[in-house]
Amino acid sequence: MSVPPDLRQQYLQTCQNLSQPENHFVARVLQEADESDNIRQAKGITLKIAGNNRLVPVQRVTDEDVQVLASVLRTAVFVTGLDLRYNILTDVGVRHVATFLQENSTLRYLNLMFNDIGTSGAELIANALHSNETLLHLRMTGNKIGNKGGMYFASMLQVNCTLEKLDLGDCDLEETTVHIALMLKNNSSLVELHLCKHEIRSLGVKRLCEALYENCSLRYLDLSCNKITRDDVKFLGELLKQNQTLEILDLNSNRIEDDGAIYLSEALALYNRTLKALSVVSNNIRGKGLVALSQSMKINMELSYIYIWGNNFDEAVSTAFSELIQAGRLKPNCTDVEPYEVDGHVHLAELSHGLKKHYYWTPSYGEVNNTAANASLAIAAVSQYF
Image (cartoon, rainbow, N blue to C red; front, side, top):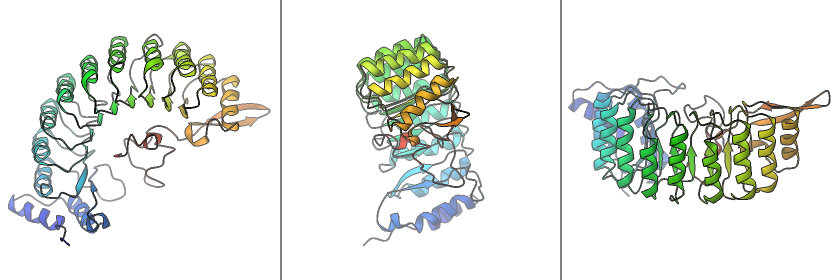
């Protein structure tokens, strides 16, 4: 039986060879990996070197640290995930990550969210993925790569046939939605796409929907925190009448209002039987639209998760969702509201449930992968590399 390499010892030796100071947090994570049962059993592990870990002292990873780390991991075939979120990597350090991606054939998950990566760093990562055939999940969230950086990723997805999950949310992209839509017409590997905070308006929604008529792989579309209005939702409603692959649609923090909710409810009640989860949190929807969505759930048995908090509830809404929950049609852990009664009147209270409550941070107590708070983890294994 082969003896697994000593990652911590290799790291300390490489620091010495490159005349770099040791990052004690990195050394600690590598030591924990050395002691992991998964290494002993030759199973894949994810190195969690997140700079926002509140449970242990953190020394955030720098460009110099990642140079050493990339050198050590070149031979660590059992490392299948690398979480470097909330560190201080710049385009200089990303050059080492990109070289590692070009040479590596085992990494499946890479999380670079909320570092200091810009346009040139985006180009380096995207170019590396032209030839990489193993990475399945990439999170670039919060890196200000700009429109040009987004274009590099759109071009990459015309070539890459293995990447399944991509998050480009909050990357200062405003004009790339049309190009991403063109990519979706040809790409057959992507199953999860996050386009949060892209300033998406009518034209972007229209082009995305046109592309998704031809796309047969995408199952999770995140359009949260954009500028989608009730008129724009007409395109999504028409798409849902024909699309047979989308399982999760996140419209959180847009402005679809009653009319938009009714467009969606008509498609879900009469046509669509594949969507499993819908989030319309904080969309300025009132009683008429929310009741229509509740009625669609009585007809459509496939839609199992719905999130509505942050809209305008009246008693009709409270009663409608209370009835769904009491009848067992809507399970309490599949929505973000809970009915209660005061003086004979039904009201709704908020629950800390959603598609991705812990997407940006790890809770300091309780269950990390709580499926009620992170329902996308439980739906068709779309987000298994969370």
